[in-house]
Length: 106
Length: 507
Image (cartoon, rainbow over all chains, first blue to last red; front, top):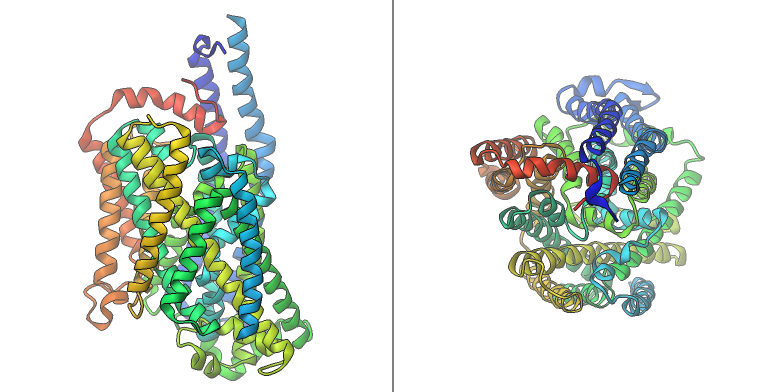
């Protein structure tokens, strides 16, 4: 493979594009699960009365938030899988073709 | 109890047959450390579930919920959320960049022997801190369940683990984990169905009964972790520590590419996550049906809650169904420990044989055949050491080591890993700084905290992650700045990023 003959700058620019796209989605998603879960532990530590408010029968807000965090984690996992397949993978494939194309061109 | 032994011997025979098969397919280093990267997403997802659910998860979470209510449920949630971090930031870069170990990634980024050495220290400390309590737990559990002595129980578990790893490498370890995960999920599902049929498929009854029996306080947080900062610290330790646990992260090397690594995380999140959610229901059901007094009478820490609940649901003590369920759950608990200690032994042998001997001492100049032999021998030595430590740990409070393992993973390994993957200026000085500060602050704070010193604690938190993690990052940043700019390393970063995000090595 004529790897050394590729134009590294063009390839690196495409990689940076991929990273920017990843950050655009992953930064908010990371904030969501960290706030959701660490926020819940903070509430459990500092706001016991609030967490103890009954919601359904004997089930209090804390348990509802715990259940919500399970659903949130699963929803984020599935969304990540979709986003990665539709947005990140094509950009990564583009980088890979750039490298092989340039290798053939020169 | 003989029934437990019988079921366990069947599980053992299955795993030994797997090891015999795996040994015939384990020839190269890639086979030994990474099962030749040929696993599917589902296989790796099950294996991850088997790897990540230690006895603490299988038995501990149910016990904590039964005795302390919501704190147990919060404890069980963390290990699922932790996989969000792994999925978003770690799994795919790990697959794209490394070969067999955590050290590989740092080595390929920094290309300095010193950074490799620092990473080896992080791996070995975390793995042994994790391994020792598992061995001690195995000793107690096997003794309780089968009646053989603690020492023999530890030796028995240690020898089985050595056989799996030394002969069958990653392939055997993986299938032991898969078998264990299937058994664990099967046990969980049958217990869940039995509980639901007892309470007429209305989970609200569980909460109402618990409140009626133990007052509303039981359903509030703070019964187990009294200090509010400990709640947050535990959460941080889980969410960021998992990504720094070498024995779990090396599982991503067993799949062919980043896409499969990604899909395997989604698998484990549903498999293990469902089990964790289940433990909350099991715990509440145990408090209602078995009762806290009976749970405490069997084991102060509540670690026998799940077997007792299974016995109750099967028909109670002395009935065939009750004895079978107890024996089944107990045997799965032992299988759980076996799967986890095998992964720890394999990962430690990677750090010693591959990272330290081959890449640090010999600078990579060892032929593959010799490396496999070396890896097998290292696994035997580590196994023997683990047995010795397990026997020495009898009667010692090893709880602090569990906290330490996850805390060091979060405070030393995680900052170094993340900054290596994402920060251009990060350098060898940063790796050393992050490892040293993260490791030392975790160890010192854990040693002067309530987990070791009880009432004489010089520091209020059981879990120091909330302080040691920022310190680890600070150490990494300061180390980077003090060491000065490593321009060659910064220029290489573009090529490194290309590999991290596409898997293409451009050298």
